[in-house]
Length: 115
Image (cartoon, rainbow, N blue to C red):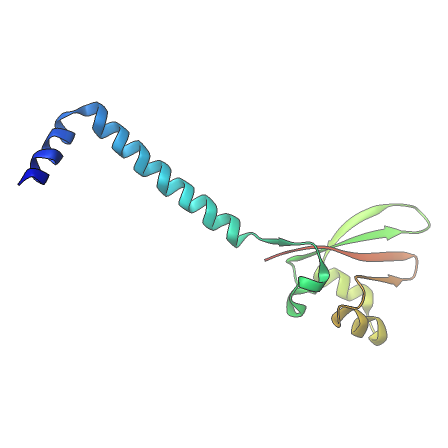
């Protein structure tokens, strides 16, 4: 019975009700933001990256051209195409012994992975 009177007082007092609603909305917002942060985790160390995601769209690699001294970013699928038939480099890379490989004039280095 006392609970109902407290709720009734809360509802009759617009200011208290507004505070209650605002804090509830703020809590929900903070909960959603923290969930998004967990979902958008970025891995920059190749040793902690899952092997199956190294050559996907979620992986980002830096390409540095030795001759023209230019830098660009590519995804994992494009990096795998640079590897081509270089099985020894692919094995080193997938065993996480190294985070880079060389293809012609291009130096390709693992940058980050979005999980």
